[in-house]
Image (cartoon, one colour):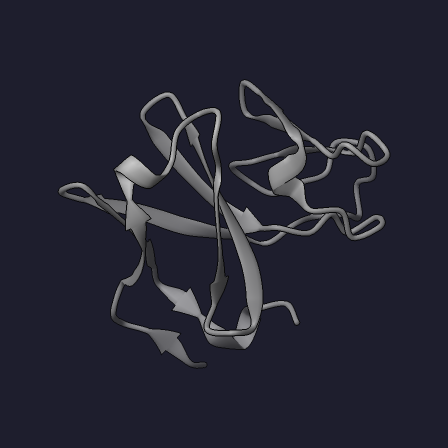
Length: 113
């Protein structure tokens, strides 16, 4: 198992807002979107498993993210799809250090490709 012990820098908190999620590529393997919900930050794979839509373009209400292509809904904390029990998006642990956001405990063997 290749777990990264070092936190992975995402962005400054000034780069993200509830209206503007932050998108980046993690180690050239997977595109991640980070959402701010109140004072919490949630990172997840930026791809709907149904048809590949970019989830950063979705609609976030409370902790439910709705894909704009076909209306699939996801819990941004767990990544679980609320429409199809078998569908899930990969989530990542986010930590705040000062004014900066980091991914924590990245298991590279579990990155969806």
